[in-house]
Image (cartoon, rainbow, N blue to C red; front, side, top):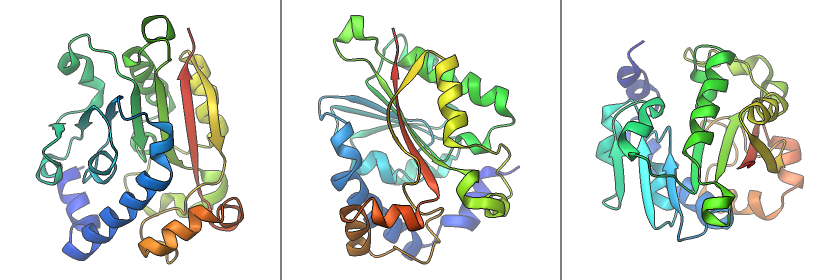
Amino acid sequence: MNVQQLYTNRFEGQKILIRKNRNWKILCKHFFQKYIPEESVVVDIAAGYCEFINNIRAKEKIAFDINPNAKLFASKDVQFIADSFFNMDSYLKGKKVDIIFASNIFEHLANKEQVVTAMKKCASMLKSKKENNTAGKLMILQPDIRYTGVAYWDFIDHKVPLTGRALIEAGEICGLRVKYHIRKFLPYTTKSKVPQHPFLIWLYLKVMPISNFFMGKQTFLVLEKND
């Protein structure tokens, strides 16, 4: 499958990308940042058009994506690597990181065995508590088929049906433990009818857990390295 062409068709367009970046700016400032100390080394393993990694504050920011077009959207303070995150150890050269962010990636892998392999790779790249006083964390934003239903398959590149519970079980296999879990967090896609305006995103976060109870289709997990 031609990923570059697929994502060009699905996402590229000035209005879509501007809107997505504005929305992620609100999400990072008012939600994700509280889980990420500003002195952290953060890796985004499926950066897309870099909406998360551009808008999060961190000491060092690294982004992986197999779509080479994504490099054009990375901020100057982001080290962008046009390759699979499965190869990240060859680029990081022994460096361990504080945070790995995985947004809407595991459903695209070939099968559940590859999901476990991916999580093991992430766990191996995180700092341990012995080394750093604070254990590294894998943050996952993931559509949950329990809540999306058949709409999960509306995207041709979705291959693996996953729930939050399945990801927790996979994480435990890989030496990770649950630190934080919101079962129903954000709506399914950026093409959802609501909320889309930055103010509505802010309001959505402000009135949680009411808003996400009705509209949440994606799970949010923070898994901590357990050693």
